[in-house]
Amino acid sequence: MKLSKDAWLAIGLFAILLLITIAAAIQQTGQEVDPPYSSLSSGPDGTRALLLWLNELGHPVSEEILATFQPPENIGLILILEPSVGITIDEWTTLDNWIRNGGTLVIAGDSLSTAFAFRHYRVNLSYLEPVTSTLTTQTPLLVSPPITTTNTQAPAYLQTNRDDFVTHLAVDSRPVVISFQHEDGLIILSAAPYPFSNAGLKEEGNPALALNLIGLADNTQSIWFDEWHHGLRSLRTEIVGPGNWLRYTPAGHSLLYSAAIIFIALVLGGRRFGRPVPLLKDISRRAPLEYITAVANLGRRARHRSAVLRQYHHWLKRGLGQRYRLNPTLPDDEYLDHLRQFNPNLDISALHDLLVKLNRRNVSENEMIQIASEVAVWLKEV
Image (tube, rainbow, N blue to C red):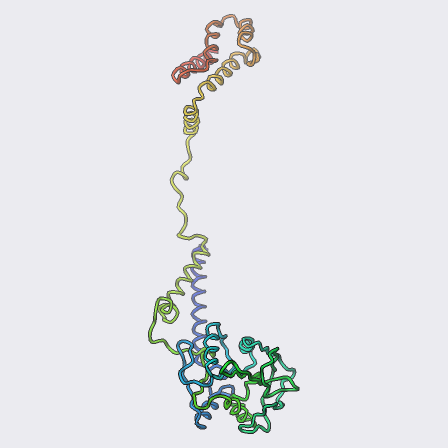
């Protein structure tokens, strides 16, 4: 059985809806796995060990996951470790204002998202070939606690045209960890996130490096692990406005999916509100008499009675002289003399009077009809 175009369209839309459902399910399943360098992850690339260790050392740590991006209260240090979500302009404004008031920001990573974050401070990320684990400490030395050796596994280094930064660790004079002031606050950038990870803290020298960098901040305030830029959001308890309802509720998602499917159906169907229905007047063909009547009515409205009589004048002379091959364009008197010679039985005087009537200019509609009837009689007799 051959399927119609609408049947194929319905099958295609059902397949698209099925693919969207499968993709949403895969995404939901993937969200159950903690992202790299998350404080919730106990895997080798997580930072759960760092959070627990700082708690044991007496550093207050905040594990708050936000519904909207805003540093929690009493936070002195923010750790953004290998962000997987880009930082927006509004979020940079919030962070910069917080740093100006005395906060310390640590950004560490070697991914593309981290490179974009570094560019906010006019610092570029360049990659090393091969990855190196041998770094040299620079002045001022990191001595709280003293660092003897590190295994940072640095895959990249930092490049900048700033002249206000301090290099803490470098590889062949190329900075890997730098810091600089931002009004009353401090910014620390590291191209080596490995020392902060669960696996990295097991390497010699890395715990001391982490403590030195964290010790640059005010220890009296809490440390916040930024999970917002790992894509983790808290569930909203209050939905404000239709925009949030569409974005954060299952019913809103269903409505958006349905609207998208309907839009695709309309586009693929090539019509906006169903098949066009032709009007009745476009279906039925006009009769020939309607065109004749329409032309006659136009001539009547334009008062073309003299032109109609001239046309009948030509038809009469052509019809009478056709048998004798007389030229209808001859003057009327000359034409009548030739016609009398070929056909003496014709009433030439009556024909002359009719031609005079046909040459009249100002005639009424009734007179025009009567003259046209006389021409029809002459042509019929001939």
